Image (cartoon, rainbow, N blue to C red; front, side, top):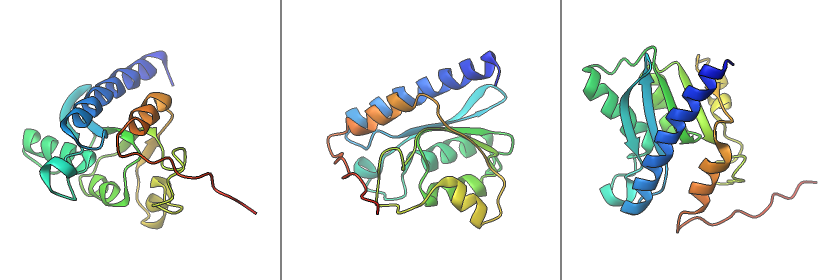
Length: 163
């Protein structure tokens, strides 16, 4: 990865983190996403499940809806989705349906020790569905995890016991 690519990822994830703060201040889970094509943000979204009363109003879906409106099409080929949190299976499928080719992630479910998704990962869903989606992770992870852990409804999962 070039220095320019790293700086671009850092910049766009910074915008995602700002949207996370807005979601938290509004009373929603602090997760946000943006969609970028050709260096330009074409869609923004943050979790609106609590304030919108819509269980499908996850950040990634909101960003896809915004980008589709802005572009006049649901085909978001050539775009990259940046998200503070690894997309859930519903959101990952929406990303696939929108033909987004790459996702850039901050926090991962495994890193947050979340047990409500079992052994789920974006890569496992991609593999199971024989899909093509480039996954880039490790971008501003500590900040993305801290935002999520700072949410008033966050409950730190117990450490997994193996053996």
